Image (cartoon, rainbow, N blue to C red):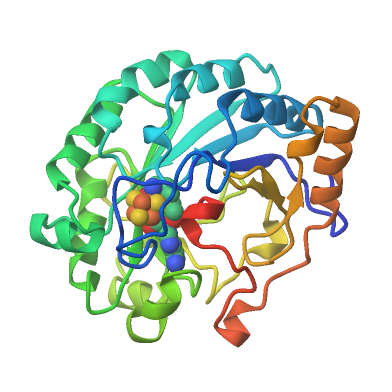
Length: 320
Ligand code: SAM
Ligand code: SF4
């Protein structure tokens, strides 16, 4: 579908849960209000299947399952299998912290998953434990290698730039692209949820990285992407920059989002939400609501001016 600003919307990002096995410092508070299946009520797998089926009828071709942590959701392989049955869906992706990925990836791949993004902000064991408040880095690396051995269409690492916390490792992340055929993408920290507390002290722009590493060569773009892609001369992978603040990409935004509570979000940074749970058993109305959500997409956000997002939600509730 084409939205009110001439953009083709073909990508749905779904938060499957607001729960997580980790507590990354800029994403989730150490102690969360008690989160249960009922409070707040979360979508069930069958609800998501109905919404994805509806969205595919409106031109959605790519689905990303995220969270919270999508791999703690029971029967996610069935969800991926059902998603894959939709002829119009050509890409099924997950964004995960990678901790449970090594055990899950084989079943997910044969169910139809073809793209994996792994979030990883440090390559040092102790630092990883601190940033994630308890995660084990070796599990993430085992998962990365297993994904590559299974030959997924795309494996990416997403790294949030945190000045003074992980910027001394940028070179090590870039060097991963010499060893692995992956995209390593640096993401600017957004002043959203817990990120607001870290933004003033630790925010770093993509531009600063590019100034430090002039050996990165700009790639010619051949598909719509939120990342600007670069490459080292002798690498097998690529280096991407996702710069929602310093170089916003609203003009080419092609996505809508669905929260784990079943609310459509036309834009990550707007507070507008459209509840679609009431319409799950009425496909005509469900399609109307999804269509409406697409048409409600604002032209752009203004966080680069006000340094604060308009959404009251945290990243793990919306699905980063
Ligand atoms: N748990 C999964 C994971 O970590 O990949 C999926 C959900 S997590 C919310 C998705 C992504 O959002 C992660 O890459 C995380 O680093 C990113 N994220 C969370 N808070 C952020 C913020 N304030 N600014 C930028 N990225 C953020
Ligand atoms: Fe969990 Fe992902 Fe947020 Fe880390 S970034 S706390 S892994 S949802």
